Length: 383
Ligand SMILES: Cc1ncc(COP(=O)(O)O)c(C=O)c1O
Image 1 (cartoon, rainbow, N blue to C red):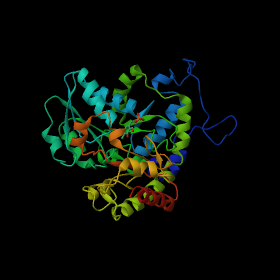
Image 2: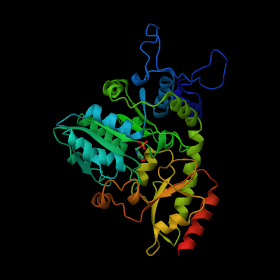
Image 3: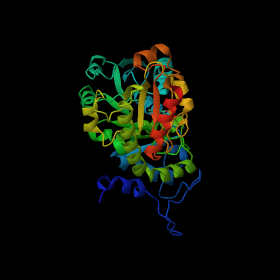
Image 4: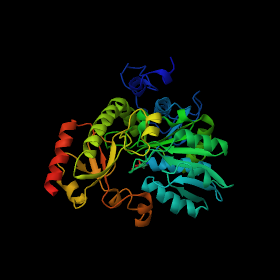
């Protein structure tokens, strides 16, 4: 049976695992070598060529999770994003990008790409037809993030992939916020799927990593520049990431359930002004999200009612940690304007719709009653 038809937890645990033929150990052996006999049948094994045993094994697991032919593993999510983009964009090229995206990606496109003569146009993701209007003769890539960080904007994947194919463009999606458990963009025809594996794949706030999944042909194109950029992940962290992914199906199911419960509870609370979560019927693209997502993930963003101070609210939380990043087993919260999106500047945040008071809550896998109790007591402290 192909791993593509096995259940998600079986794929998370077994797909691509290495077998310990010497001792029969139950987990993949770790090959730390950076130097291999170049005359053995397996070819020129070298970590920067993305082909060492643990890299190949984990790539198989990630490819199966994303229903893609091939994958590459990088030292961070940003390394995966920038390597994917630089493989398809050259000086003089143009890229169409959703406005509401992760601050680091926004910064890369507006600062570094401009240095290399690559131009961009941003598109309001809530106006799904606007993507085609921005395509020019030199456009090579359409880039989206769905759901987006931190506003949980959802883009119609069928629409994007059909548009890209009809105009001979490469479509790239940052699938980090969904995780491969909740969304597989390749099944909707999107060409290249990137992840910050620092988030749901790692899941314990202790691994920095990134992945790219795509066809073999696109993988070869990305590999040809990535092997020179050299942003590889260490073998030990690759081994740890494999271990983390084994529980990803279970973790994400719990993140989904807790977040749905809390989003509905927040929406009904008189001290909350606005909740963004694709699992809510009130979300502008809830119907699209239902079509393309199996679960709505663990990130919610919301605003407190007028007069309540968001920073004081974060300070008053006792179980939920005030912390950067997201998707760990522990619940965390932050103000995107002061953290993940401080780099994009006030004007861009305004265009994206990120207010200074917006709170991003990454719902962990604690008991949901404890999280509700924590939010309740924090609201009572600041009222
Ligand atoms: C949606 C999204 N993509 C990419 C990244 C970058 O990932 P990394 O920090 O692993 O480089 C982040 C980081 O927060 C993110 O939120």
